[in-house]
Length: 255
Image (cartoon, rainbow, N blue to C red):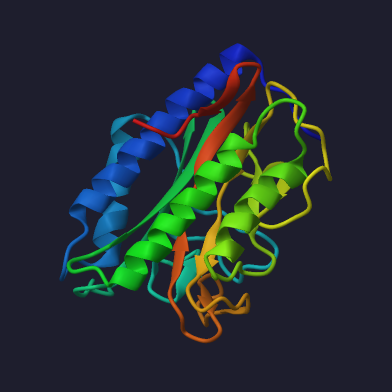
């Protein structure tokens, strides 16, 4: 069931989304060569705590995971696509980092992700990150009343495939509102004109994930959470929480 949010609800989600943006910006600013991933989690946690917000990530325990997620931030490095657990790994020059964060405020959720390079960037990583952002922008542009979920998926997939990148199987965006994950699922590849019709008041987390080698295969690491590319190629992840409105898409997870 898809909940249609009121204007007041969307404003409340905007407040949660602003906190997400602040947490990601602070964690990105703290990222540097030699910094431990768990330090980035501490920074993000400080932003949430300071804003009086909770975390939909901390303690999240879906059926497929062996243990609850232990952090407020997902930190995925190089060949890690998503769901990386912040640990004692110290960032190295040239690492490609994807940070994913959520916030809960007054009963409403926000969710976003960003990818960037620590230190000197490889040209191929810069292109990969740019493609993920372009795919996200295309997906957001398709989130208008009268379009369908398949139009968002098609817009994302077209950008990714045209650039020669892979799209990890089985991962994509989702509805969001009172819970972090709500209906409907938002695939990162699909056929235009298919799926649920978009209506004002729907809110989605749109999140393209790209693999550099062009292959789609991944595996779950031994921690039971981190999703890595099967061939060891690098990955990039970009995400925003987006409301469908009569006047066009509204991105809720920006500063």
